[in-house]
Length: 219
Ligand code: IMP
Ligand code: MG
Image 1 (cartoon, rainbow, N blue to C red):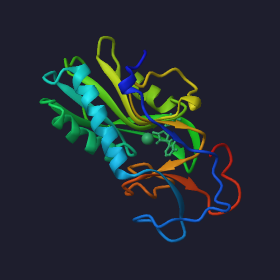
Image 2 (image 1 turned 90 degrees about the horizontal axis):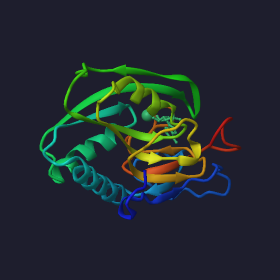
Image 3 (image 1 turned 30 degrees about the horizontal axis):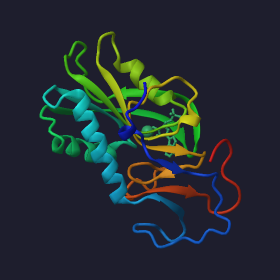
Image 4 (image 1 turned 180 degrees about the vertical axis):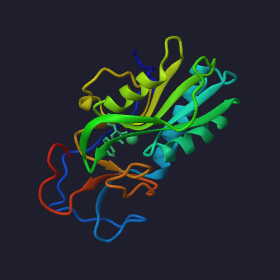
């Protein structure tokens, strides 16, 4: 599907990680031993969240019932801001449900993602569903979520804060994208973690290894 020019996500460049020669500037909430390169400050993220909410409200129709299916855990911060921005964009009938997808340990994918719905999802609901994800990389996680949620006829679209098209290994259509990533670097902050850390940071940043090359496989 072609995006309208106004809906094209801005690009964040995330090169292969090396902390060599990198001098850590002061960043709020960062422990002294960590190295993170800031990619997007909070104001820039908020502006994108509001633009996404406006596009979703425009396409969906503000009065139509909408359910956000939030993919835990990474999408919790993004979803909280997006839900409130959708209200700001005029959406009046919003429900928020959660599911859990787990497939990563550190920076390396392990096995097929396991999908766990954290509440009942009505099989024949006339509500439209918007899956809210933190990042689409290979696309296997979001593919597994969609396969789980999409009985024939159910209206389902995907909204991801971050999309890395060059990482896609299975076909996925991410309708709403906050930022497009270029390069293999690993992203943390604003809900995204590295081994459970950094979710609370209000900005997006590239995780840099303490020293030496990036871990095996990626980043
Ligand atoms: P996919 O199946 O490769 O598309 O993986 C997507 C999932 O992997 C996301 O839901 C994230 O939890 C995790 N993930 C992939 N890349 C990153 C990253 O750069 N930072 C943090 N989590 C990531
Ligand atoms: Mg995730």
